[in-house]
Image (tube, rainbow, N blue to C red; front, side, top):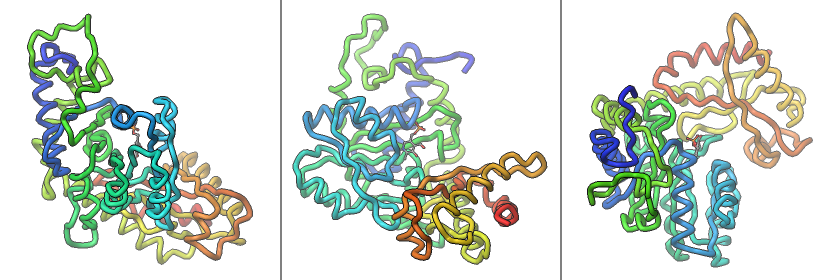
Length: 375
Ligand SMILES: Cc1ncc(COP(=O)(O)O)c(C=O)c1O
C-alpha cells in the first residue's frame, strides 16, 4: 500500500499485475473453467455490473432473469444498463424456482439468467446445474453470482456434515461468467471482488481509447479488460499472499470454510431444540436465520420481538450482541412455518452470517444470550 501500485497498466503495477493474473488463474481453476478472462474488482457489485454489461453486449435487446432472492444489485444494475430485469419466484428453500424460470425463458426475451450460489439473505444455493440445463435448452447464457458463496466450491463433494452437494458447484465450470468476492470468505479487506468469463473473447467489449495512460507494451494490460480505471495493486498482492498460505484446496482455504459451515450447523442444532427461538430454515452455507417464539405466533408479533431483541442486544453496554435482520414476505414465512399467522405482508427475522472461522467458538454463548433476550 505504501508503494501504491496501480493495476490499470502493466507499467504502473509491474509486480502486482503479475500477481493479479496468477490469483485470477487460481480462482478460475477453483471453478474448473477450461479457459478464462477475468480480473479483480473493487467489489462484488462492480464485478456483477461487468458481467451484466457483457450480457447486454452479447444479447442486445434481451433481458436478464434472476431469482427474487438474488442480491438487489441485479435489478439495480439492469436499470443502470437499460436492460429489462425479471425477478423469478424462489421456492420454499429460497432457491430459484425452475418451473417459473422456464416459463420466463420461454418468452424468448431473456438473454442471460443469473444463478446465485449463496444468496445474501439465507445463503441458499440456486441449483446451478438445473438452471444451466433449462437455460441452454432455451439458448440463454448463465452468469453465476457467487460473490457470497463462491469459495464454498472447495467443500463441494466433501464428506461429513460440512460437505456440500457438488452438482451446483461443478456446474459453474460450464457457465458463462462467475463473480466471487475475496473480501468475503477469501479473508481479504474490502475491496476485493472478482469477475471471470469463460470466453476470453469477451475482452472485445472493453475496448476503449486511453489517451492518458502509457501502455508501452502490446501485452494485455488489465486496464484494457476492466470497466474500472485505477485499481489497487495492493489488493492483488494481499490476495496472492493469502493464497500462498491458504491455497484454494479443501485442505487450505477449504478448512476455513469448513469451520464457518460447522459453526452454522452447530447453531442450527441448538436452535432446533430451543424452546425460545426457532430456526427459520436449514442453513445451506454459514448463514443462520431464526426468530423468537411468540404468543401469538404472528408476523406482527415476530417482527416486534425481533426488533426488540435487535435493539436490546446491540445497545447492551455490558454484553452486546450484534445481529442483522432479514425481511421475509408473509408467504415465505408461512410456507416454512404453517402455524404462523400472516397478519401483515412481511416481518423481520434475525440473521447471523458466521463468516469467520472463529465463529464456532462463540455460537454457544450467542445462542444462550439470544435465548435470554427472547425472554
Ligand atoms: C450474492 C451477492 N452478490 C453481490 C453482493 C454485492 O457485493 P459487494 O458488497 O462486494 O459489492 C453481495 C454482497 O453481500 C452478495 O452477497
